[in-house]
Image (cartoon, rainbow, N blue to C red; front, side, top):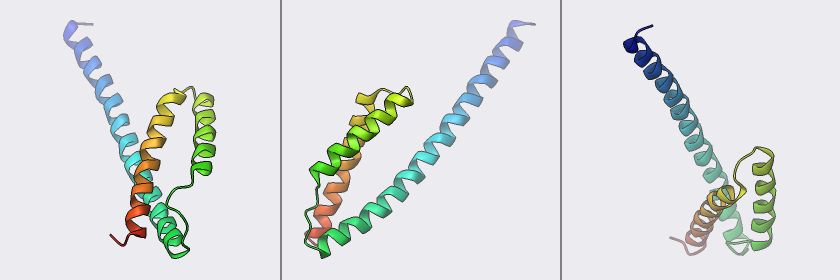
Length: 102
């Protein structure tokens, strides 16, 4: 096999990996969009029920649950927590905006 064929195979392999990553990224975006549709409804419910935008006890419970899922999946639990905290912070910000009528 020539070096040119090896380079073509490497390029094909890399392209295949990148296609898979692109598909996963697209799925993540759609899953996040769906999640935020639901949290929007939660925010509206909380506002109409005079509930606070944040629920620290639930947040901590969710973080620990997802940290365990990450460990089970051989994913860094610290990374998972950072990712989840980013999402939670954004959800709380949305809930505050709904509560404040913005």
